[in-house]
Image 1 (cartoon, helix red, strand yellow):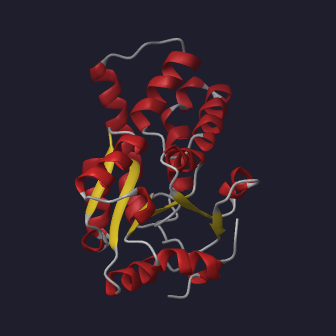
Image 2 (cartoon, one colour):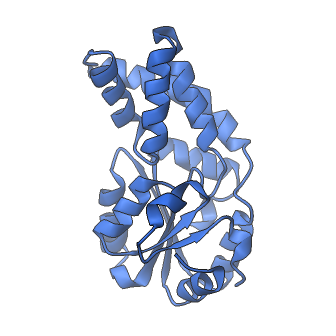
Length: 221
């Protein structure tokens, strides 16, 4: 971990800035936690608690993978494709409007504006479904900041590979801002510089040569 001035210098020396979305651009993690709880409320508080704990420990993993896992492991039921898609649609209805209206992580939009002015490549790499993240970004007037947006069903690792290959970027050209352990794992798999956003990720950054900020207001470009 390091201080904000070192993060600033690192950002200035990179060609491409990659962002997770929930908990990095918008303060929307709790919205999705409540949605998972609501989705499984008919199965009682014991199952709800298992779902919530797993969700919080596996931020950034797609809802398709999570919901399938919860039914398989917690309810001993295998979902067919129609059932899984229906549950994912129900989840989407619970969250989209609330995410669109959620607060941004402090300084996020200002940071994007500054990066745009100094002509950095910018990308989103998120576990949110592709159509949904496109809609949310457009509704929040953020879509045009990004050269391309990468969502699910592709994993974050596959998205990262696509970002590098499709945009002719080297790993050393990039830095990834994320808030979850899955974000950290994706960065480490590619040996990419990583900045953890918020306090939740901090425990995973101990003894690692990565960085941590609580908000983008800390970075003075």
